[in-house]
Length: 302
Image 1: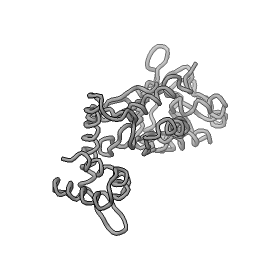
Image 2: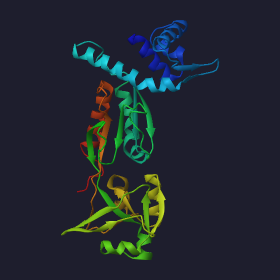
Image 3: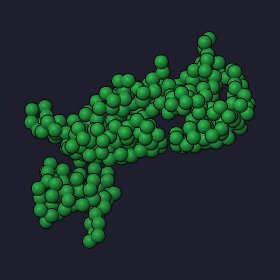
Image 4: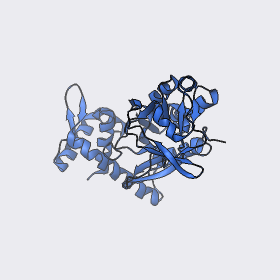
């Protein structure tokens, strides 16, 4: 299987433009089309759908794309091991992350990263819904849950401490819970699919933050919306410290049950498929985020 044809296919799949992909590799449009057709004949599959108006990835092409990327990554790693290849990182890095976290901490850093690494382009998927890294052909993702998927490897970015919060107005109207049992009489705001969380006191387990009961008045699937609703007085919610530390400092949110801790094994992980070679572009981006965020998280509690 010809490596240059694979490289052409990956570029064409990313840009949905065969001529542009060919030009990037120094090929005339006719040559690029011929090479892709030859690759499809060799594989016995139509990888791209072509029309006079556009190019789109076929179902078989979408299934083959992550394997093509992996072959190219292996080839680059093999050359690097022998001291060959360009020391400059190039290519498109596909990165998935929580939209709330990315808006606060990652997006403001990206101009600096792109300026420092002109050969790298970023393809971002920012959503509080989690993407499948392998099926989505992602190079890297940020996850703020326990790392349970055995098909993934990860580097710890930072701790992800969780706090119960409410607005001052809500507390003025409904009172401040003194012990975990008091939560049963309060309105709760839950993140979708949120599991019950044990609340720990000085002497051990002291209760549970459980949003499955009748006092859960709102369920959301977006972290920023949960925080905004909580600030508006909707109820008590369980939030990451990185999401609410500014609001706690400003007083637009107050901590509920400050003498207790929410038991949670969540950590902010930078994860990538275990089967993938850790390419130069991915390693550079991981090191950048560790330096800019992980070294001294802006939300770190004193």
